[in-house]
Structures are given as C-alpha cells and as structure tokens.
Image (tube, helix red, strand yellow):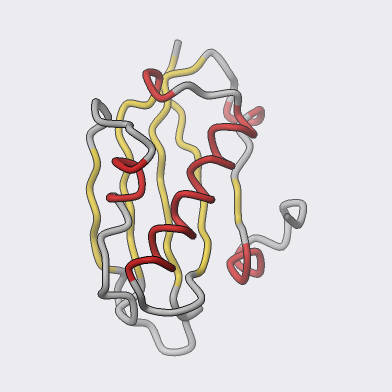
Length: 121
C-alpha cells in the first residue's frame, strides 16, 4: 500500500456558504467514487480556495459527509491575475494499492478547463 494523491477542482456558482459546500461535497463524492476509495483510506485532505471565496471553509463539506476521522486543512490560493474565479482545489492523500497511473483525478464544472487532458465531466 502507498499514499497516492488524488487531485480535484471545482467552482462555486457564488460566494455563499451553501454554494461553496455543495460544490465541495459534489467534488469529494466524485473523487472517492471514481477511485473506489473509502473514507477510512484517506490519510488527509488539503483544500484551497481562490481569494474571492470567503463565506465558508471548503473542509466543512467533508465534515458534512461525516468524514470526522480525516485530517483536513483549508488554505487560500495565491492571487494570480487571470486565474479561474471561485475555484476550490483539493489534494486528497489516499492509502491505496493503485499505481499513480490508475488514479482518477476529477475536475468539475468550470474547473474542467484546468485539465483539458482529462475526460470532461
């Protein structure tokens, strides 16, 4: 078993607690579904949000999914001119027997433009 990183990103429709948490929950659920991951296999999750999202910590979405034993951290993204607005990024550290090539990264909503090499969702 190795620690693998699953990357993901999504966008919130607006800077509201409801939108941030709904978008983040959707992303987390898709990340574990696409990789057949279980919450008890997740070592930790790092969340970042662009500076225009201030109404909620994205990590709260994992708590709403009852992932209470998973260490979580939310941090701000650096402000880069022309960056995708209202973007939430996730790095999920996952204990798995999969190879890095077998890991499915997930980019939803407007964040799909960040990784055009991945299939569109």
